[in-house]
Image (cartoon, rainbow, N blue to C red; front, side, top):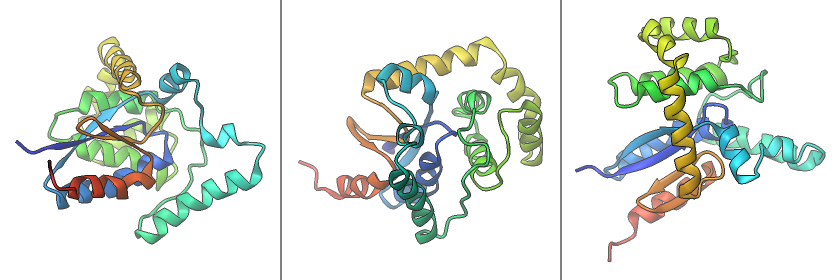
Length: 202
């Protein structure tokens, strides 16, 4: 059975977007697959007394300038198309519920790519259901079924449960990746994941 790298994410994070763009190739190089675990980042922040670093350091111009520079540098050095969303901080509750519904379906990766790109490449306002529907239709995804799911109680509850389960695992933000029980946080930990995977087994 192919081993997995669990990728815990919320579309609202630019760092999660950048990690997502790099992680599948990293996994493939190491004979692994990415398992997507959508969570609601505000729920995790509340449970862990954490917050968006751009808000946490809003009065520290040097820090926020560096955080922005680091995002663009990461993208530039990997040839990734990235733009800071004009709607940041982004409300992604409906989009992330859609990812819960997409889990395990043949179009899961297509959905995740479409939403991430809509926010961090095209600057679309995904908190509006009308905008979301346009994105789904443009990408030939089952828009009607996804809309029913993302506005329904079942998927909403599943997302809450996944978010709470992530906190119990030790997650305090996104992106967080797990290789087995080993946790890695942030896009800049991708190199450490590769080192972990290349380490000889005991």
